[in-house]
Length: 248
Figure 1 (cartoon, rainbow, N blue to C red):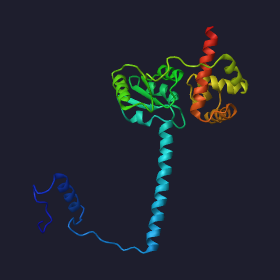
Figure 2: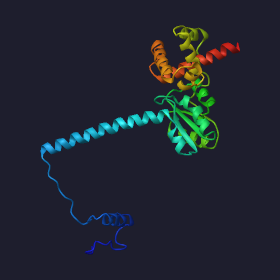
Figure 3: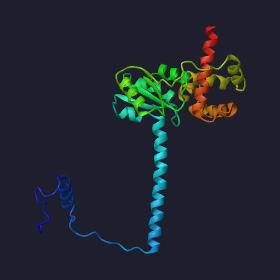
Figure 4: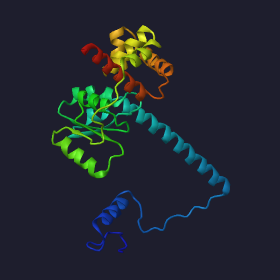
């Protein structure tokens, strides 16, 4: 290499030559051997602790970001995708609650729903809320490719693994569930089954969103539902049973 550290043309790959030029522009000597730093055991322990602190902080920040993204529409607001893969089991708000908002933001966006719950009622609810396709999370690559191709082409896709029929909540079971709840909690359950968000339910009932969230947590405990997703599913089943009762 020449004494002025210039990069000989044609002797190295363009990417390496560009990296070399950036080093020179920053006042660095690419030919200088790396400096070897000897650390005492105490210094090494301090560095390890500092790295552990950084990792813990990063993990906490990423978890907070994940929850925030799950509850808001930042990605849709900043991008214009042709399609969206949506997990129904999101932190904060469920995918079913997000679907109407997604449709309002981008009516032409095709949404393929992924879920671990292979349930006919949930599939119908997702499609009714604006999804274009519905597949299980453990679907094979071949099925997922078929689903993506269909959805991006504007065609509805329903996995063959979704039952043709499903066991619907009977009227007795519906009334038994609602009987454990206060009238206000029953109203929240019915609105939840219609896909209303906590904010929308609060606005309709004249309550704050945090109050509705508290009621939802209370309902889960009363009905023995382990997750927010189970609450959404139970609300949908009750709503379907109520519609069937009205139709009879």
